[in-house]
Length: 451
Ligand code: SF4
Image 1: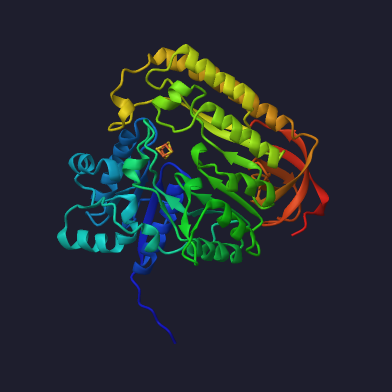
Image 2 (image 1 turned 90 degrees about the vertical axis):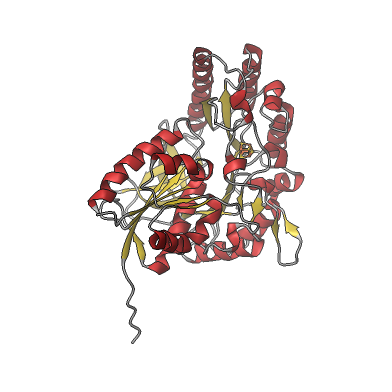
């Protein structure tokens, strides 16, 4: 009989920000599981709380500090037993501020050091003081972190690349996540095989600059993203592939061609352009022009006519004039987006654009409203155009109401249908009957999409 006498501890993880943070949070839980940590839904009574933070949005630090204030109360109620760790980009960028404003925090750990969590926890216990690890090690953390341990669901995220060398004027990622590093192709494929064996059918490849991927292959040569996607599509059970977030400067010929030849690759791409003005793109240090973005869109539509796009926009970057903004609106109208995210520029401490004279807030507000109204109109038109069409839907589980099941279209739109069977993990043809602002309602068609 195999008797294990493991101490059981409760771990609560709070995740802010992007899908990469969601992925990292799951990996941190995996790293701590061998120490007896099981994840729980509430911080009350937890032995350890990890706050995995994001630095992208405005007032990120303030949100972290107010959440830490609430955790402090719980830590005091536990007699000091609860350990608090701050991880993610705010930890990387603001470790000193965290320790001075919240000295009850036990660990401040940057994104490159998650694999060292067990050792850092032991050190914090030993010293009964705060431990900081925000080093960028020579070897990327991919070499040390365990692969995803459990089933993530029908749609699974898989980080293949981290960091960024682009240094856009408004972005903290190169400072908080370090230089671009790609995970070896063999390790990505092994994790994808395991995900597929556990029931995942759609794999979303993640990276801050994912299309700059250049992971080492078994033959020693660097694989680009196109080659990796081709190999992933060969894995039994993998039906759909997506990748995010891409940079226009890294959309090479191979990757564009892959969209034409790889049927598992969904006809849907998130390609941030940020502005339609070359003057602003230069000021943002984006390393591409508006016409380069237009050409990529046109070439992708050429190889895959049903291709649709999402993007990111920043309005009110320092120096943006009415003419620059008009160029952005022109690009938006020409391109036609299925969905897009748009934000007012807000200075991030330590980034070059933060030191420049800022655009008036009222001007930024007016431009954002105009842009968002157009993007909303395009999103509604895109969704409305699906009504009456029959399209393959990958079902992910039960819907919100009894008798409903939910899934995702080719364009990642949530689709809800009525069905007596759950059909989880299966792809079926669905006729779209109605488009809500953020989801589609449809009816199941008889035939099932071939494997
Ligand atoms: S490419 Fe993306 S992650 Fe890199 S600096 Fe620019 S905005 Fe940030």
